[in-house]
Amino acid sequence: MSVTEQLAGHIAATDFDAMPPEAVEAAKVVILDGLAVTLAGSREPAARIVAEYAREMGGNPQCSAFGHGFKTSPPMAAFVNGVAGHVLDYEVMWHPATHATSPTLPGILALAESRGATGRDVIAALITGFEVQGRIRVASADLSLGGFHPPGLVGVMGSAAAGSVMLGLDVQQTRMALGIAGSRAGTVSANTGTMTKSTHCGNAGRMGLEAALLAAKGFTANPDVFDHETGYAAVMFGDGFELDAVTRDFGNPYRLVEPGVAIKKHPSQYGTHRGIDAALELQGRYGVDPESIVSVHIETPVMRYVGRPFPQTGLDGKFSFQYTVAAALLDGRIGIETFTDAAVRRPEAQALLGKVTLDMRPEIPANFDEMWVAVRVETADGQTRETRCDRPRGIWGNPLSRAERLDKARACATRTLPDEGAARFIEIVENLEHADSGQVQELIALLGRAGLG
Image (cartoon, rainbow, N blue to C red):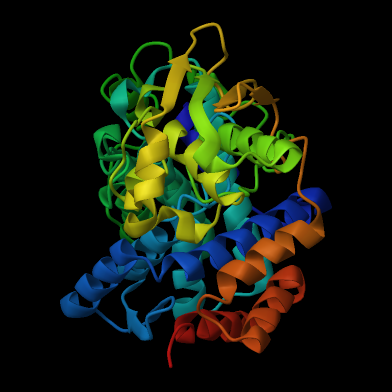
């Protein structure tokens, strides 16, 4: 039996009743965080442009564009909501690294809305979509990915898997869905720090969902797309891809449970979080006056795409060790408003950036599980103060409390929902395994109306 057939068998056998309670709880945490971040992201310029484009393109009005008050086709809704879910760079992170929520959850909810589904259906599809992405990343963990952005490679497969679960596809149909999705993978990391990066996840969600919908209608593809010598694994990952790892120990345990996910505290690239936390700790401990700072020195692993000395846009600032540390020192906090274009360009930020030096050291591990970042500040009175962050709060193994997670969800949701709407949204998701199709429709209606009026 090929790896593709084995994988399709796991997907087709998805059964909520067979899933462990800890996986169900982890899925609800991810869904709450993902939808809250999507609501907040729907206000961003990139998300507004994509929503405007989708509205102009039309389509069968079956599925809600969250935060925009209109409906469109399932694939286009997955695209719009996937962009909104990723644009803030605030969704959960994973190890090995990828963003798994925005490529999968929007398509799941599009099918839930257009075809009717219970909360159990949504949870089961999400767990399976995550597991597929996680296993592919395990199989490719030691590879450079050649400039591809991980969600663009694996998110389309997670979306196709989740869509196959929602549609009830059998093993052969699921093999076709995976085969179709194999020709939809891609994205280049050169677009990191631009609006286009958010479309990596939105397109993965759209294309994976479309692959499942086409497979359901009898559309064909190579049934062994993972195994073929010119198939998905060979073309996208090259030599070194551990093919057997895609299905080995599938769901035993689920990757959502072990290692689990990191809930982001800050809306920026995850590597910057250690620098942010180190700078915030330094400010909290010493209360440094930003005007007295003579120099700031940051030690990080080698992560070239996060070394941006003078970003000029909020999106670019999310990928700058220099700006994120400078903003933490200036403001004593990091939030969504930290990454507006105006915040990045303010004179005091640009002045402090001119005093920052970045030392990327090859001996510091570069993976999110082991890396560390140190920040050293020198002031005009001759004082030197230094802090280091090894494991930020929220990372796998060092989770946020439920209260902290709910604080983030409320803060994000109330960018578009009134307090009572946000409370109801949280209530439904926290009890999602008990939600019937009517309550799922209520949840989606809340999301669709968010931001109106």
